Image (cartoon, one colour):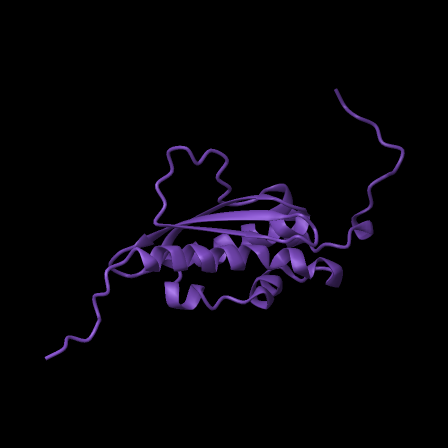
Length: 152
């Protein structure tokens, strides 16, 4: 069944870039069923301002300390979905991002890759990188302190 709308869609009527729309309509790395997913780190973030909530699961390659998988799920708007989808791509592409680099990922870097967002939607774009930092911190807390100085 095809639905007819009174309002006719026009490309120029959107305030989002083509990249944002692509990541919103076709989000990457979404995890809908986490019941059997084994993550190395889990992070949660939320914004009381708009009610968006985000959860990020990561898997780390133990030898390289790079993010080999980044899964996520959100209850959020198009900006939150697109930003987190792009973030998940950025930290896993080209063999994965080192966790030291990933923990310093800034929303501006994600927005640049998306082609920007409306100013009023910036607060939605930070949920993914906050949840990512939480997931990296969660992973790090579980690791033995290999490089602790030995006392003589």
